[in-house]
Amino acid sequence: MLTGPRCRFCGSTAGELVLDLGHQPPSEYFPALSRPGPDPSFPLRLWCCARCHLAQLADSDDVPESPRGVEPAALGEQRADAVDWLVGTGLLPPSGRVAEFPSSHGGSWLDLLGAHGLLAAGTDEPADVVLDGSFGLMHAPDQRAALRRRVDRLRPGGRLVLQFHSLAAILADGQWNALRHGHFGYYSTPALSGMLGQLGLTVIGARRFPLYGGTVCLVATADPDLDHLGGRPGLESVLADELAAGVRDIAVLRGLQGAAARVAGQLNEFVTGHCAQGRRVFGYGAASRAVALLNLAGLDERLLLGVADAAAAKHGCRVPGTRIPILAPSELVEQAPDLVLVFVPELMAEVRAALPGIESAGGRWVDVSAIDPHRQQSPDRTENLATSA
Image (cartoon, rainbow, N blue to C red; front, side):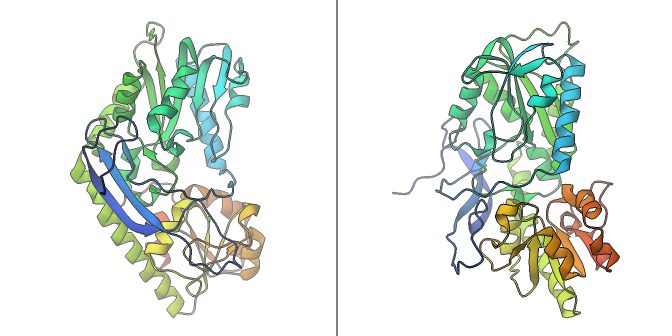
């Protein structure tokens, strides 16, 4: 007998499905181009718990892991900004030990924190600061157990630092393709504050950064001493903004379904229109977020001739569910494309600077995140689909 989803944190079965992308291939796996397929596919659905309000994958499937990607420069810049804020507000102690939980996204905060007197803790050693700064928590199927492991590493009075892509940003920008296999948790500050409260911690500060349209750095502790902080830096503002964005509003969350259908259709129309005019269209950024987008849009290797990526482990592979080859950046330049669709907007400035040969040969970079006219756009977007058509 089939049963409905059960919350990965609180165990409740009360909740709502808010986004259903059907069966999708594993976005964490890039098969060799020589492998003919078909690729396996699994249900990809977002469910929101009515009790603790954690948005999460509704289904659990054994999907393969992906090759580790190359970290965007924007992520390193965000990390440095977050450390400056944490130190400047006094949310971190001036010295002590740091335990960092790793992530398949890569990157580390240890060097930055070491410059401020916080040194790496030994294996399983209790720490003054426990850090999940590279989106590791979202990869845990059992969200309660994963969060408990982080809390249990804290020394008395220690600080837990979490960084996460905010559900509020996903809603505001219509980022439905943030949903992907292997990413089990999608957090809001209100929900995560409640989850931490159940484990004995109090949130004492939060700040939103522009990465991925809205990434939050949050700090919690079991022994909140707020005298030297002058309150809870940034927390009330972040909470208010996220609640206003609708992170607890099922009707708002369900709007992601319409965004998915709309954007997939617009992308197909855009690419097929340019191909019909004889233009050669490629992509950049074979990231997991591109997989469902390309599959829902019905794009194949006849329309999108290749997707370049800096991760050498992906070269010679293909986008799952399609026959679109993954190229080295140098191969992309050699192809002299007319258009290059950038699937990771944070890479736009970086790749334009690294690959000037695209534009010098007459090609154009196109920010795919700008395809949806309903989506809020950051003012620093370089070029969008409307101006490129």
